[in-house]
Image (cartoon, rainbow, N blue to C red; front, side, top):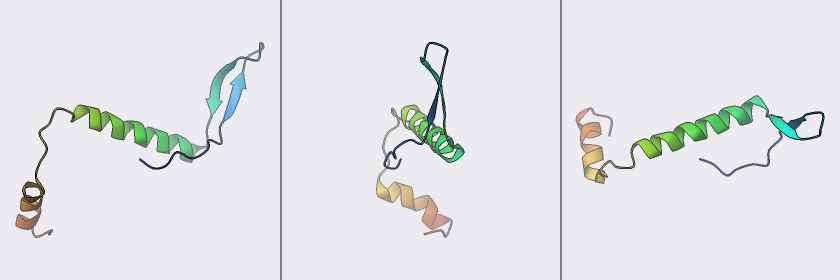
Length: 66
């Protein structure tokens, strides 16, 4: 997740002037969706045991990727 940039969004207001929606540029929307996906994965894996660097590297070495 990167540094949050200032939003380029525009608000949609109702007849009372209350904000009811926001319009975002597609790039910003896609970035937010990616961030939400990343956060969901972190939450999903919160209870997993961490792996050592060696345990992570072993399958990569066996596949010739490292």
